[in-house]
Image 1 (tube, rainbow, N blue to C red):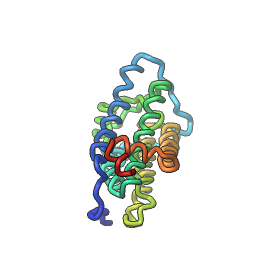
Image 2: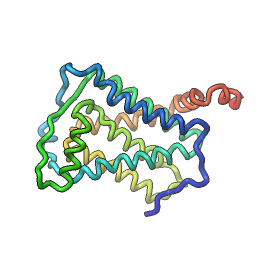
Image 3: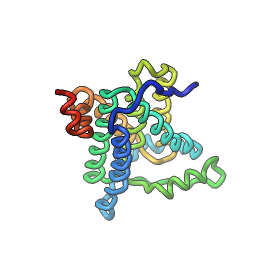
Length: 226
């Protein structure tokens, strides 16, 4: 399957900077909140259903593959015209702001299993465990980002239908991998998916997307609209 290359589309003015700001904000939300929750009680949300999900260390390949999905689809969504670009970026920023509030108000954490020495890609999963502490889990940013990757392209007719279908399948596979690698539990996944769709709808059905675009474009945007 060929990846769509948006040759006829360009990013709106300053959208590239907004993308970089989104990355920086995610890092701040995910890592910075730990400065305020360290030492506090962390809630464990695993259920018997979570424990019934098989532990499959090799699915860390799908988990890590999410970063490539994000890189491709975030750029694709932002290169689909002014309205979609700012709607997408506003939805992403809104979602991370909700995560910021929840991480501070409801700290979560989980225990991770020991990775069998003979497990395929077990070394990679242990590296992920080492680099990514098991907290700030609800809602799952992995699932939030992956769902937005599909929402941002699903109605774009200039993107091949096969790639749009792939984006949905990839998003769902990433969500499943967060469970099979024991990075998240079902509550985290559902929270991330619901949050992603809600933010996408809010950004599109209200003036949030347009406002966010004006915020980035400044006075020039106001003059252009007049």
